[in-house]
View 1 (cartoon, rainbow, N blue to C red):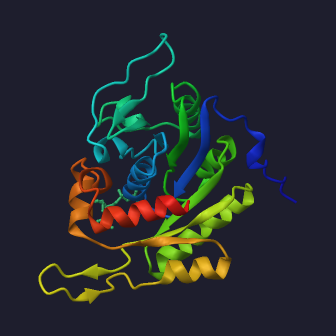
View 2: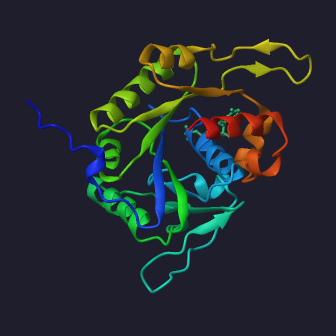
Length: 259
Ligand code: ADP
């Protein structure tokens, strides 16, 4: 039989950092990073000191989502100072390499980069560090879930079957390494036409809620497919920070409050 996976709790935490939580998805393109950024900002809006670690080494998107560029400074020649935007701290591979540089690293180098971003960044003091996980459930993700002392994981999925099948793999991965599931978010849950107000369930609807009920894990909320989310996200002005009174921001803040 395969050796039992190392339990998640065995890893030492980060001094001065409260909980570390992962935001994950079974596949790319479901809105995981957009959700991670807005949940992080929602947690900050709820009064917590928040950090965001972009663990997607091959496709870092946190710099763009937070509208950040430039290089982090070092504190003592070694420890990196996290960048900051909209009141949260952030670290990403995107701050350390040129945007156009392809990352052609093998697994061990990816792991050491993540370990560095976790342990050689002056994160403290933080109440919560949100880790935007790489998409998928391959070896890198599994190792990552084992290396990082995670308090729990949030899974982001679109409503339709295919995305949910992938999301299930994500759920199973965290279960395997004993990371508790904090719940599932349904992204692109429905669409309201801005012209006529008619609702269309473009990617179907309710699949994630149903899955959460089936697995007896919390259903954290439904985020609509919406132009304002896409535009703010892609232009580095995340909606929770730039339109805090909007209905969409309220949805993300509610999700953050349920975590
Ligand atoms: P992932 O991290 O899963 O690859 P991203 O967060 O990068 O996904 O999102 C993929 C694309 O979808 C981005 O262009 C993003 O702006 C857009 N997007 C994400 N969530 C929504 C949403 N709820 N409504 C509209 N566009 C969205």
